[in-house]
Length: 177
Image (cartoon, rainbow, N blue to C red):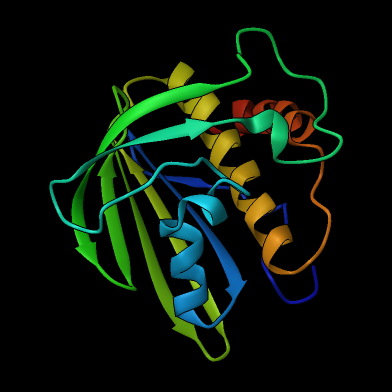
């Protein structure tokens, strides 16, 4: 992936219930912002869902992880073909920051920082309720961001579910018990 963040860039706990993960992406910042806020572009790496760009506005995320990569890999037990989640925008500063609620597992903030012709994306997921949730969320963010890097650099990502499964084992070793 040349000089962009590699799949080995793991997230870290910056507090007992807060995960931080970063990726360096090709700019400009407005392009990265569109991948965050445009439903069709976001569906290519995370989840679809139309957002009205206004604080307090509710929206729905719709995940279809099996469509993110070809091949998709072997889906682990307990995951469906689609997942829906109601969210609400809690902070908005285009094109640098967006925060929203994350169902029953805290809230998420995306911060974008220009770095020459690249953009550093920092994802902070706060108030993760327990280690079991962390072991689903951390490899999920990791894989979704790796897919985003691949989409933005016209490269092929690792099959989503195979990567998620591999990363879950890695995060199990990295995250405190």
